[in-house]
Length: 329
Image 1 (cartoon, helix red, strand yellow):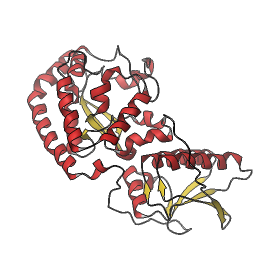
Image 2: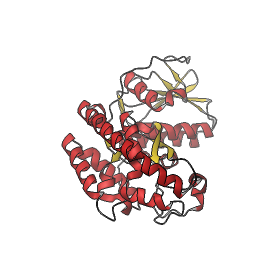
Image 3: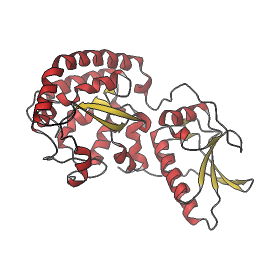
Image 4: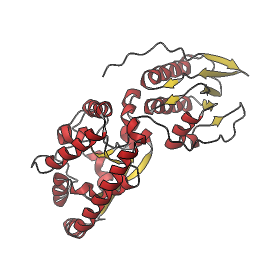
């Protein structure tokens, strides 16, 4: 994935002996890459580093997941140099993104050069048309209710086989990153041994990039392999869809440790809600072993998205589930 860096100045001026970096009107992937580079250069090349670096967002009208990614990178870089990153004059669209991602509780925000709590906009940010589509949300609610009904019918036999096969809980909870990187707890039927998370570091990763995959993962139980092959382990995720944390169709929900390894352009995949199915499920599934392929499929979904396209992907997912080699591993 090749992205050219635009010539965006990000000028730095000195106000009351502190550097103030002017942010652009839009902070998307191209601007975010340059923002990260300029900030990094300032932190490593300055002979005398100030105690704080102020980011002036007063003219910024739009920020997406790439902007969030660059901001997180720069916050960590500044912290490593004992420099406090302060956000100045954040308008409602930017404030909404910061509130959604929880960054407003981590990074100091000020409306003057004396920090105090800002007014938070309750209007959610729009990073992609699918995010605010009431038709898509209606489809999610209807689909999740049907899915939860199916889950309730199959719960007893699935729960019994899980408990008889291996000791441990019936459900598996894991922290994932959703829209704009906001964290939530995903829920599945347990398909691995109870201490799978602690054993992960002992299992070799066969994938390339910021994803983890092992075709013959020894942590998966016998019943777990069947649940994964038939995707029955994912049925409880209909609850995540009903709560609005996921969608029926979207991108693959990454783990926080995967997001930690993202470069700025890769944050684009978080511009939409994660889904129970999507391009990666229909066209990649368990065959994907390269993170760049995941990115390509996720961005293709964002480009091609429509309500009809979501319905097509749902139908293809149902058909794929009946293919003997379709299941996740």
